[in-house]
Length: 252
Image 1 (cartoon, rainbow, N blue to C red):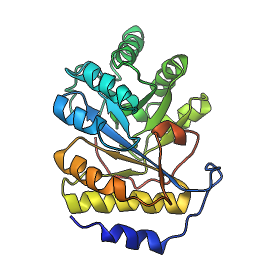
Image 2 (cartoon, rainbow, N blue to C red):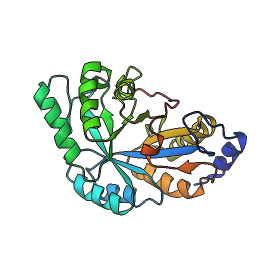
Image 3 (spheres, rainbow, N blue to C red):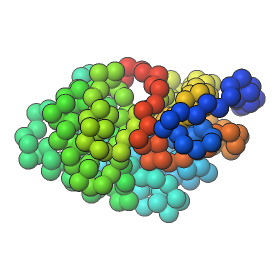
């Protein structure tokens, strides 16, 4: 696969820093979501030669192993917290829903955070229903804050209030800018990576979220070493406190 288009795209844009980026170069964080079900794909993500952030679904068969290897490889670890969707029935081992009693809601959060060793942050898995519920987001962010974690809003719906609540409650947070692989086509994945790079160049920072698909991991393995020094790859936590431009995509 050729990546000459990456150099062309970068040549078209000059870095423009924003108030939330006090460094002299644009920054890009890449999160790999949905980890925990496949050990091999999780290890492949953990071994990618870049400071990626690994987001692991709690209580999955390989959550502990992937988190442990990720920490050993210097990766930042997050809990990918399943939340109720408006479209897809719950299928993960645990899911935060609007139907949970108060005690069960908080106990589910606490158990999930403890199930992923080394985790320092959280983002939502699906959640197009729960992230629009302000009272429940306040309860959720209280637990995140009590555990001294940061939060990334995956922005699975334009109606999400999660980041607003996190900001109001002083939880370090930011939002997803781009999904890399809603289409599992290598060319489209590369184009989305270019989109994330261009957002970083224009806005100062960007957050891209991908998944452990073979196509995504292959594109990242080939493209990341070729990213120019104009864009610094950083863990997701480095961008908390910034409100970033989004390219919203309707997913659960």
